[in-house]
Amino acid sequence: MSRAAIVAFAAVASLNCVAVSAQTDFVTAVTSTHPLAYYRLDAISGKSQVGTTTYKSSGGATWAAPGAPLGGSISKFAKLDGHDGMITTTQTGGITSAASIMAWVNLAELPSKTGRIVYVAGESESGNDLDVQFESDNTLRFYTAGGSNTAYAPPPATLANQWHLLIATIDGQTRNRTIYWDGKSVATDKIDVMRAKKNVFAIGESPVFTGRFFKGGIEEVALWNRALKPTDVTAIYAAAKPGATAGSSASTAGDSVASAGAPTPTTGPFATTAKIEMNDSNGLVKLKREEQIAYMFLSGIEVIEHNCQLTLQHVCPLNQILSGSYPKGAIIEHLKYDPNKTDPNYTYTLETNGMAWEAHATARKPGLKGFCLMARDIGTVVATYSNSGPAGWTSTPIGDRGTEGDSFAIQ
View 1 (cartoon, rainbow, N blue to C red):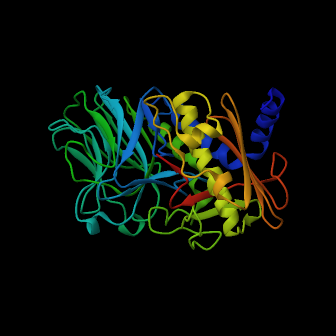
View 2: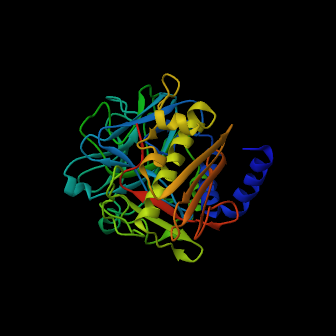
View 3: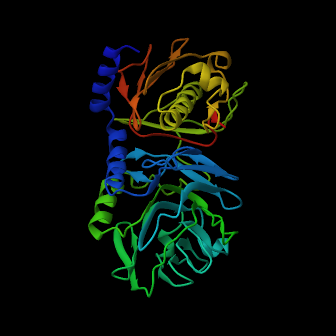
């Protein structure tokens, strides 16, 4: 990719990538408050948006979309099965006299139906808790000492299969402990003592109080070593502009999601039942199954390149993401199939340079759309399609988009 192409690429990103800029606004709102760690959970493993810590999923944890309502953009999230799916991080301790924990959550069912505690996130320690969890009475509780907690019971009808932003704060100096729900303070009390925490920060399951596996969707998880101010919480929630995707989030942690095409399996070496959703400025884009497969390959490349940017500080060429030949210790996905060998309907190209990449799926026969995904840095991806011929910078911008189900990017 030439220098001129990268410059042009940047211009297109700033003009056309409305959905991505909305996501970036939320990310900026969070990072501007200087968290210790911030895990977007937009892939099965990756790095914190700040600092050097990493996260890794295990067990029944998969990547899915659409996720939380971040300003009209279809975000990605960790989908945990409630059986053995969990996320571990390398963030340890860092908490002394104050803390805050944030997460977007979407419970697949009421905790009263699950019949046990459902863990969100924290640094568990016997007798010195820092844990956010839902309990079997459908109450959200924030523990900060040896059993001491503040609690909030959301209306049960609004709890399951809907995205909510929860933020819990504790301030050892003022002794205030607060739970915020969708940007509003809903529970607060006073504590007697706040002691330093030294254990590992975990998501979706406590490594100390085990058997509390979360069932549903989690994303945008952050940890601070200070108590966020009410104005911080208001600004973070406002940056999400959740009303922009009202009605689209309720099923994200369940078994299905709106699809632009029938989720019937595709025959051949890349059989899949994944569902694809894609919108442009006029609404839903109807896709043939061959077109959905082409988008899935480009989406798989997007996931991999995002992790290459975070982990290696540069993007990866096609031969590397096909072979998975990354530096030792790098936890990055690879493509499950070689698209140019397995897909008879499209030709695929990938150009890379530094932190920039550009991927094309060009139809080999008339009647199929062409697709293009482009990025010049972390978190900025432009997606376009063409009803005929190759897609590029000047083609129709894709807004909301997402995949529910399996991915062509695997470990």
